[in-house]
Length: 316
Image (tube, rainbow, N blue to C red; front, side, top):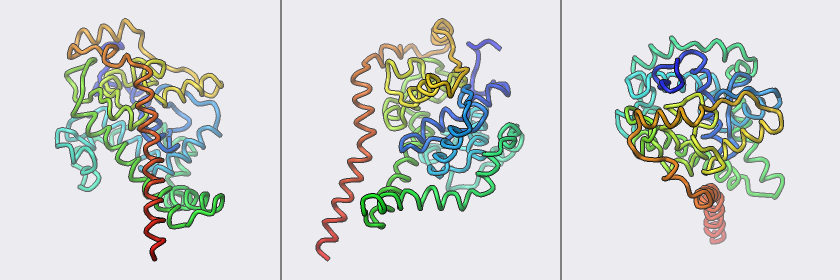
């Protein structure tokens, strides 16, 4: 299959395996809650160290967005059957459904039918995936709830209620909505410079909130690109790609796949909407400044909430 003709609905098994963890790594790294599908592929990245894989699995559990096995299953179905009834968060059913409604309603029968046909043997063969799935409930109690509450209480004598509200509740809600915006906003608003025939789009707001996952039209057009973006971190705000490149530099990741520039250009000329993504996103300093500001905004809001709680408590 020509790399210029790869669509999210026309992938072979190898390409489907390559999809998983770029999104997971990108979306959940907002609060050091990255996740991966060890030890297979993180968007065509092979991980050498089981310690590193365990760290990413730990972060996946802290994110509390389903275990690795279930998350990867839904993500594979989403890419293969994007914007159909088999898509778990089909954006054609509206913003709310794509954002969070799909978690509140029963799955469409097509989602269940197609999901049962997805090959997940590569995931189940991994002992870390099996262990996490088997002990998921006690793991989330420990990793998602207890540890983030205990650390600030023990290290700087934070009140347990404030530690729980700030480091568990607020963090969880914030990360969830940043994740969900990829399924909603990045499928409904933005440019489509690579493929105007699919719904995923380049959405600047989601780029900043989700550490680079907003380059979504590119990601669905070239799902096997390890960085899920054309330009990477050297030109745009993309902390996840920076992290992956750091892993490669340390010798912990290898076999990073990326289409050559002439193939990307050819694809843009053939199916893009005419917008030039390089022109739109050429402001490197501005892009990173905005991304860092949005990233730090969580800490600012959290500290502000703590100040409000402390002020209220002082009156009682």
